[in-house]
Image (cartoon, rainbow, N blue to C red; front, top):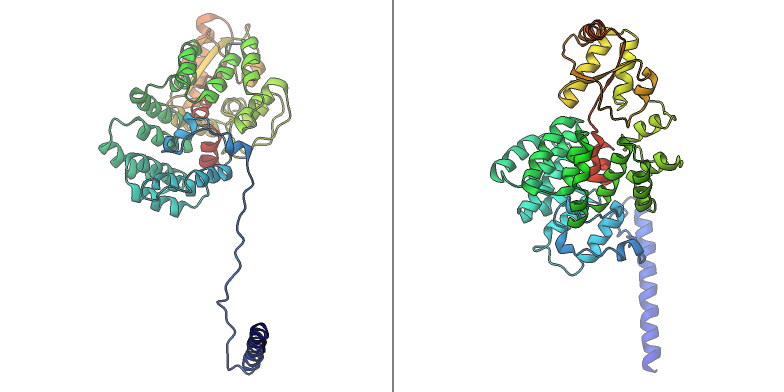
Length: 410
């Protein structure tokens, strides 16, 4: 007998024994003597990633991405799925101890918040604390306020701590306090693109533009600089600037860019449901979508609607809500010979330098508005049209981009 034949006989015997073993086990299971094995190994499908041009062309060192805000600084617009894969590729030969913060971010963008938190806690440096604060905000942790109070007490001059805290107020649509905190943050950071956003919020558009050249030179968040430049051009009615700025952005496919595609050429685009500004864009272009008053951002329209309907209780309640969001109820009165009510209300990108501005006082907002209107008519012997003159609050959200809105409002 050759060695080969000997091996074949051994294999045949083993196969027969295994077959007999299976038959005996089946017979025992039928009799209830042996329970079936419920801990069989499950086959796990290994995800195979194909080469992706978007990921490959991203020429940012993993060492430069230490916190959530670095994604904005470096204009990283990969989807969360691709972004987590980018981290996975760049971290494949890195140590967990040295790069635990980046590993945490990888898991954060996979929505595995528990793993992300463990990595942030193990690093325990300022970037990981900032990332953990970001995680607490998007996860709606009850101790988020307490966490930031402690973080500010230990790092009172760190701009990124304040910038992260501002997201908590943006999430609540407390735009005024978000603005104040971003202003504090930039007193330490001194980024020109943030100065552009703050001045655009205040509708101080010429001052916002004064930071444009410096913002380009600094090279941070260039996409935001172009976005805010586009919206400023709408407010100052500079169609040439709007056209040239749109040309720089039109090839991008992010939700923020899709909004200006609608404004620029009425292109039919469907931004995601988490984009609260989309509602205003559609209304401005004359294609309003159905809305629910309790979460709508058509503040000017609803404010005027409740007043026209003489719904005193609803108007007072809504005016109080406006005051909570923006710290006051800013109104501008224009002579009715200069404009029509309908035009003023529907143009959400208007800037009126002329006019009489007041802050409407509560709690009897309705009665106080009637009194102001009567007093102006008596004083100037003419009729006036009022409208809600809110800051350009979207500038604050544009600072952070679509990814942050996705986490705050989805």
